Image (cartoon, rainbow, N blue to C red; front, top):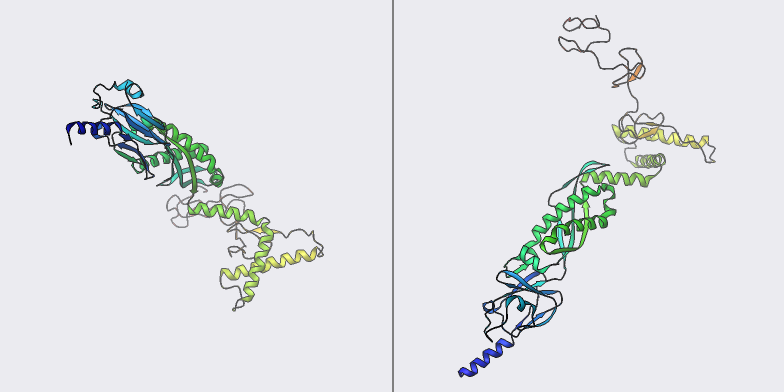
Length: 385
């Protein structure tokens, strides 16, 4: 090949150079176009596709940002040349510039979650621990700012390179948002959308400095500890039961049926036997009330007595609790001052109001009977003397 042919070939190659980027990865946020010697030739074609932006960096500074379209890099026609200078030497440009393609599409289905529980003060359950997870969509809103603050001179930058930092920022903003909104644990499931919008607003305030924007933010689940979830389930069950008295009668009938089908013919031993007796008493009371009403409906409900152990309502006269099997009868003791009959374990007298804590000997700490003048153990004189 002659020297003239070689010059023509080089000139043709310089004129037909095309700068473009086709992304087939799905997670690349930035790509540096491999320009030979970082030298952009006069007449080069720049093609920027939809959901892309081309950023020219000259001498370490962002010189210009090109939006989607086709551009011919020529002296006087390209905005970048007004900043970098004109082409002076024909086909051999003295201007060296880096070209970065920035992916401005939305990166969807990016995951977030709390690695550790978040402490929350709840009006219903006190201090509870919450865990949450979800997804969000992200895009580059300011390509120049993104290059300066995040990617730098990296030849390629993917979502994996920044996802860890974004997750930590999201969890921080989630904690602030859920504390500020003060949503009760019982109502969290109905407030996912409002919570997501609040968090997105908080996050974008921080991410704007990186040239990033969160376009969508989803809270998929907020979970509470197992103990709190059981309490929520019990509340829901009680709401579904409605009339507790009628429900207990129905449970008693089922228990008697099961006891009758038992091969032993009884309700079991210990607490099971006591529960069976109590259920029988309940049924007697229930049927008695129906008979007194003449079968015509409108009969007054049977009187109930709360269990001293678990507080569940039982039919009047029941000896054992239908729920826990505990004894319904409560021992009584006299008041240490006035002698009134009090429930065993009472701390104050319901008649005279005096404390029921027994006086102790100042010498040996022996519990003294009411009105004792001397300790029966060590003979020390008491204050009552």
